[in-house]
Length: 208
Image (cartoon, rainbow, N blue to C red; front, top):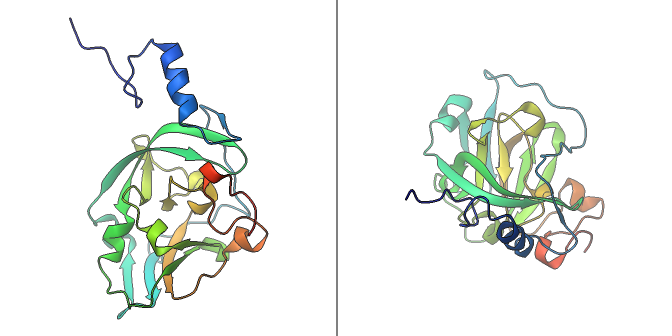
């Protein structure tokens, strides 16, 4: 007999009650499960120009690093399957992403000993902040593919950060660079009252 197909929870397809029970255990407090992928962002979708696009790392590094679009896309890739949780209370399970890991990107620079935080810079002046420990989690990556296809512009193409362990506003769209810091610096939404870290399992939605 052929082995039953399995979803991301490891349960047989067709075992609906089992999947629902497993799904509930993966949904943080105050969240609801959705199969959709809502589009949420502040401002307009930026235009992309391959000839001028670049990705930079600066701040507390021994030497700044810059990649062109083609150079960044040539970095070693990683695929991740992860659950994502939005501060607006929806959760989506078993999402598939492909890109370059955050660890791979920072392996190309030498951090200064005092570097402890990362400020992620995106198009139109958007920023979000993470501790270096949160930023370097194994599952984090800069993604350009979602569910086997190139990201659509409204979901962050040509590049978005994916940090599944935190609320999804930390997974900034249209990312252009990283600034390494000794002291934490609130990003865009954090400056408007969102929690500085954003752990969904602790319901860290709003300040401090």
